[in-house]
Structure formats: structure tokens, C-alpha cells
Image (cartoon, rainbow, N blue to C red):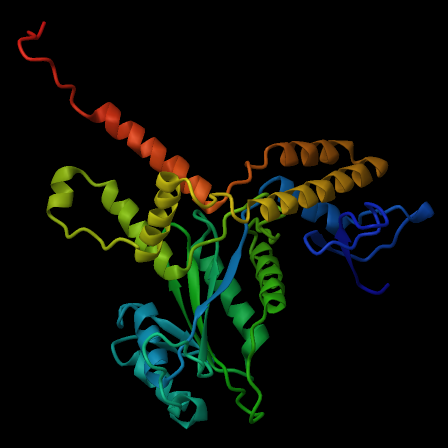
Amino acid sequence: MPKQTVRLGRSSRGPTDGARDMALDIVSYGRRGPGGKLRFGADQIAQIQRTVGRTPEVMVKVSGGGRDAGGVDAHLRYIGRHGKLPMETDEGLTLQGRGAAKEIVTDWQLDLCRSQYKPKPVEGQKDMRAKLAHNIVLSMPAGTPAEKVLTAARVFARENFALQYRYAMVLHIDQPHPHVHLVVKCEHEFEPGKRLYIRKDTLRQWREQFTALMREQGVAANATPRQVRGQIRRPHRDAIHHRLRALRVFGQLTSSEQAKRRPPKTSTFMRAKLDSVLQVLRSGRGALDAGGAAMQCTRQEVAADWRATADALRRQGEGDLAARVDRFVARMPVVQTDAQRMVERWKEQARIRVLERPKIRPPGQQVR
């Protein structure tokens, strides 16, 4: 029976004919039942169970890429922690040491790639040079066995790039969530002019593939769009994420420990964003809910999709799962823009500072 992609959700014709861009994509090998009513197959029901049960979500993202041989070399040295961590290559070799990154760059013959000799843009202009390599991150939540993440990453890389695009990978366990950095050369090895392009649909397919590979390792894993899970906030870019993480870690240190360390630099992006939010509060001009209407509309569509899913499950006799879907929707967080969230956090911090401020007694008042 041919493979069919079903999108659960509403459309102008009703909640069951399934054509929503923001819907929950579930792969179905079945068809509609009598009367055109949607029926879920076992794979679809398992997907719904994982999502409403909040099974750990995998992450597959592109974190940038080098546009010249020097940039690729610098990133390889970074993920290899300047020779401290072993790097695995597409040829099955394990390289380690300060010269490992240079060896990979030389082996890939990046100096023969035409695009790397295009001039760099002047400061302030966007770099339009083609990438020589993509930097990809495959990550799992904290508590996942690191070796299983690496095993799944090996299979993922082999199935997608082997004998086509050169690659190297490194496992990182210095953070709670184990993750693999995968560097892939963009130019095809045997077809001149053919390049690796990564689009949104590519990332979605890779995420589903990596999820299946993790489950083959016996690890509970899921892959659903963040909007479907009720998650509103987009993840920060890597540079901002690392800067904020460093600030959080520094803030958790005692005063004596902080005195012995150099404070991390603040995020200029987040600082500018907070300044603009505070300016709106002081002046009363502008809006803190810009984009909030679109976000709320998305949430309403997602909630309607889930309600249609629950109705279809009840018709199939899956009442318990339908009830779990209802509870899942009811517990979705309130829709907030980043600006609204920053204002609430700033007000809370201001309230705490006032409570912690030492009280000043009037002159002549004695302490009892």
C-alpha cells in the first residue's frame, strides 16, 4: 500500500480532510474509513503517544559553516578541543592531536574549491561566499547514554553522506545533553558541480531519521515541531546560547568564587533587546506584543488540530489516549512574546532587589 502523509488539522472543508501547514505530520500506511472519517494506524497512534507523553525530543540543527579552508580548520580545532578529543572520519579513521584538523582539511582538498578564493566581504556586509562545509549538531536531552548518541550519529552520517560528501565527527559530553558535532564538506566527491544544500524540509527529514536511529538504540526519542508541542520560544543562536549559559553559571557561584574569576561578557544582542523593551515601558510608545497575534493564531490552529485528533481517536475506541490529548492541550503554556517575557522577568528581579535591600531606620530609632 503506498505511503501517505496525513496532516491532522482543520481546513475550509472541515477538521478531518487534513491540510494544515502547522499540523502534526504523521506518516500513515492506512486510508480513511467509511464515510471519509480519518482513522489512525499503529505508527500514527505511537507518534501521538510519544508526543503527549512528552518523550524526549531530538535536535538536529545547522550551526553554521566555513566559507574558506581557514574557517573549516578553526571549527574542526574547536570541536576537537584543540586536539584533546578524538575525531572520527568518513573513512573510519580516528584522529587526535593538534594536527588532526589540519590533516582533515588537507585530505579534503579544500584548497581546490573555487569558492574559497572569492574575496571576503567588508565589515558590515553579508558574506555571500558559498560554504565549503556545513556544521551540523545531533543532540539528545540530558541523561541519554552518550555512546548511543554517537552510534546513532555514525549510522546517520554513513546513510546520508558516505561515498558522496566527506565528513568528520566529534562527541561532546561536557554539557548535560550529549551531542555530536558533524562537519560535512559541501562539494560532492565524484560529481563536479554538485553541492549539498540543506533546506528546512531536509532538517525535518534528518530529525525524523535520527529519532528512528535513537529508538533502534533502545532510547525513547521523538521528533515533532515545537509549535505542535505548545513551545513558543525559538532556540537562541549558538553564540547567544553559550553567552547566556556562561552568565547563568557565573550567577550560581558564591561571592568568593565569583571574586576569583573574570565575569563573562554579556550578550550584546540580549542587552540591546532588553534596552528596547525598557524604552517602550518608559515612554509608553511602541508595543510589547508585536507578533503576539500571529503566535496566538498559530496556537489556536494547533489546539484545533489536537482536538480533531482527540475526536478521531475516540471514534476508534482510543478513549484513554484521547483524554491524554485533551490534558496535553490544556497544559500548553500561555502564549507570550519575547518582549513580554523579558518584562515579567525584569519586574520580578526588581521586586527581589527591593526585598533584599537593607531597611533604613529613621534617626534616633533604637533597635529592639
